[in-house]
Image (cartoon, rainbow, N blue to C red; front, side, top):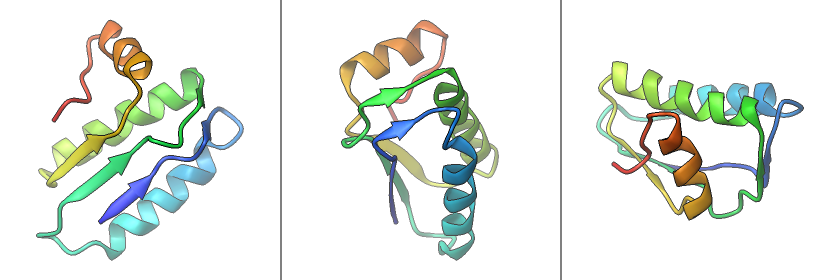
Length: 88
């Protein structure tokens, strides 16, 4: 299953995206790997970064097979500067 991040992931739309994301997770088959892509993402703020961290933690706790793909280098660097990684 592939889930694409929106063009903007900011305080104004993180709740909407989280609602859509969790709904898609409920439809996912247990053995199906999840890929979260960010190739369309052009703007992100602190709320968006927090949401990415929550997604990573939630999926790790559930031991769900997932990976992040197509994240811009600048976003990877920002996330890594906070001690997290999106390379899976």
